[in-house]
Length: 225
Image (cartoon, rainbow, N blue to C red):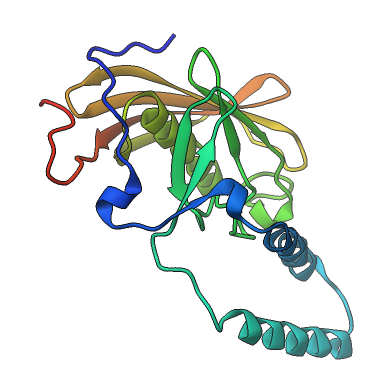
C-alpha cells in the first residue's frame, strides 16, 4: 500500500507554469488515426526489405506529407490532461516518448490507478529491440521512469526524477504483454521515494527504485522541507 507521511496537496495546473494544456478528449480522431498509422510505418521501415524503387517512392511520399504537416506545430511543452478511470487527473507532455498521445514513437504505456498505485500493460515490437528478441535496456528504464514519475504525480504532486536505479532481473521479451506497476513508498518533504517493476508472464523482469523531487508552484509553497 502507498504510504504518505504528509497530506497530499492540490496538484498544480500546468497553466500555472505558462504551459498550454489540451484535454485528451479534444485530440481529433483523425490525428489519433494518423499517429497509429505512422507507428505502424516506423515498424515497417525498420524491418522492410522492399526493392530500391519502392523505397525511393516511399521516401518521396513521406517527405511530401512531412512538409504538409509541418505548416503548423504545437508549442514546445504542450501538456495533455488525462482523466483516469479512478476520477484522478493526470498531466503529461503530449509528445512524451513513452506515453505521448501524439508521438508515433511511443509504445504507448497507458497507466491506470489501482489501490497500490498505478498499473498498465504494453506490448513492444522490434522497434524497441536491443538483444535479439528482447527489449532494449534503455526502453526498460524509460518505461519504469515513466511509471514511477506518474505515480508520484498522481499520489502527491508532479516532480522530476532525481535518481533512478534499475535492476534487470531477467531478459524482457518482445511481442509479450508486459505489466508495469509503480507505487509510492514514502514521502519526506518534497522528496518522494517510489518503486516500480515490469512483469512478463507474471515474472519480474526488471524493477526500479527512484527519488522524485516535487516541483513548486510559482508564487506558492506546496510542500515543506
